[in-house]
Amino acid sequence: MTSADLLAELGERDKTLSSIEEVLDPAAKRARIAELEKEAAAPDLWDDQEHAQSVTSKLSRLQSEVDRLAALRSRVDDVATLIELGQEEDDAATLAEAEKELKGVGADIDALEIRTLLSGEYDERDALVTVRSEAGGVDAADWASMVLRMYLRWAERHGYATEVYDISYAEEAGIKSATFTVKEPFAYGMLSVEQGTHRLIRISPFDNQGRRQTSFAGVDVLPVTEETDHIDIPEADVRVDVFRSSGPGGQSVNTTDSAVRITHLPTGLVVSCQNEKSQLQNKIAAMAVLQSRLLEKARAEKEAELRGLLSDGNSWGSQIRNYVLHPFQMVKDTRTGYEVGNADAVLNGELDAFIDAGIRWRRQQGER
Image (tube, helix red, strand yellow):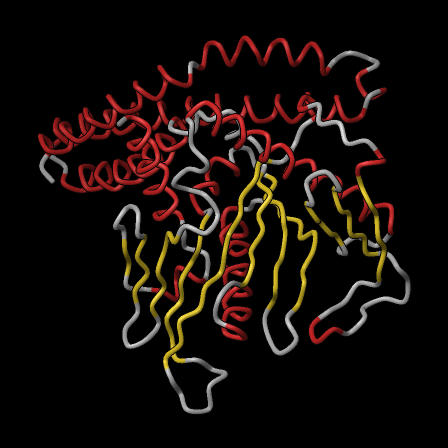
């Protein structure tokens, strides 16, 4: 690129960053940081551990966002300086360095721009994800386990903490369902666009005639509840059953009845957890899952009442993506039209482009 091209590209990036700064309002965030720092310095803060964790978590997140914005602004200024030096000295190497840095800062600005599109009521929260096998028999159970791995690998690539609450294994291969959390600010906002049915087309490894098989896995994404949600679940409204945790093939993985299944009697919702070591820990985790499901149910009912609709376009059961492994490789999103030819990379967690496209598509739908 010539220096003129670089300056034009830098101008566009600077304009985008200015728009992001306007939306995220770092000055307001700094004021909020100062308030939280006062709370965090209180000598009795840790008398209420749940509140203390909430304060320190919010403080860390806001400081990280402010630092990220400041770093991007500094990098944009540095690129401008490099271009200016390259022009003055007619130095091709300096201009090449400026082009390389501009490409990197541009990608980071694009990623941050996506964050500004996450403005839903619960978008800032951690995500509670459930993967279920749907139509397709043993292939669907195997496919569900592949989808579970895909999301866990995506989180691992970004350094996001995850916790698997429950896995129900299928008899022959794969899983019937699995529930896990992604503990990262805005995890729900990002992963909520992944909710729906994922369709796989491949040569079945379980068909001795080598025929092509289509199978389906469903993904459900909920926001994790917080102390401010005030979801009251009377003891009389739940039935708690305990059982032994099981692994693949139905094998018992411990000798005590530590796994917990909770049934919410008024709604019929059933959740379970067998990942923790003690029955009490599993009960606490299962109650957290139940609270998230009840929160989402209340939100959906409120939204349906406001819109006069029974469901929206992202409801459970809507097919959102096709994964083709035979006769060629392709992954295509049915909503955005975004597609790639490297299915293996996607199944290994390279989901960012699909998630970004989904977030932009959702915003466009809301603006219509």
